[in-house]
Length: 263
Ligand code: COA
Image 1: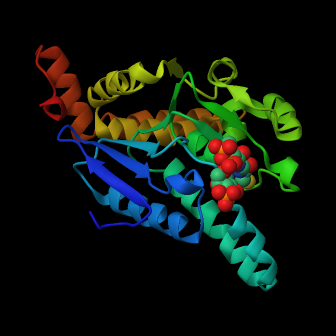
Image 2: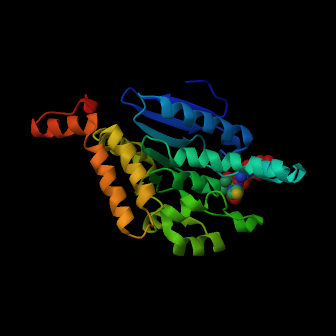
Image 3: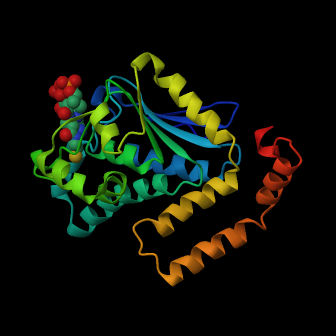
């Protein structure tokens, strides 16, 4: 894996890859460079057959203070086309994260504000320390949670988004769990053990089936159950069960042995 300046990659032998946001002096706020590094890193992980689970974490006191407000402010010197292209880089980075083929976990140990909450929402699973704190603070800065909104609304629903986008209130880890933003809350000391437990569960699943399950959620979420959607879901399983991993998984179960991806 290439060396980056503002992120640090740690690969575990079991296939879990940690991406540490490493700009602690600015609470891991993301500027153009951090966005570009994350994008490149997601592209590389997508191609890496050894990576089974991706964990996004933050060095220092906080997970991420969202967009670097200096970077946001500098946009006023851009042409409208440059401004749009620059904003698209953040939108594209979030899209890459949300559509990585591997399961993703956000490890939120401190503040996750604005785009930081967006990163946590774009991950499949969010595990928080009881010291974590979440907010879409944008309206207090005269902004809106624009590029993160698809992921946040998917995580918490439009009704909760109405409240928190408009009030910019800070949510505790427990409140985040209550509205579905965080899946689990652990004490600061137990956070990494809790994450390891989830990783172990994820490693029991077939990689191809997990990618297919992620695509399934994208296809099915919020859609009306039409005859066409039923045809699509039927086609999904019809295709999957012919695959090598499904055949291996079914054989392993019937033969009372462990499938090869658990080796
Ligand atoms: N972009 C750029 N700089 C940021 C930043 C951001 N998103 N968040 C914090 N900083 C800077 C502060 O301006 C400060 O700079 P300084 O040392 O030059 O004064 C430095 O980081 C330390 O921040 P400070 O507020 O003193 O630290 P804290 O520990 O009291 O609070 C936060 C940390 C993250 C809770 C707080 O800084 C905060 O609320 N930041 C705003 C985050 C936000 O609203 N993001 C949404 C972006 S859309």
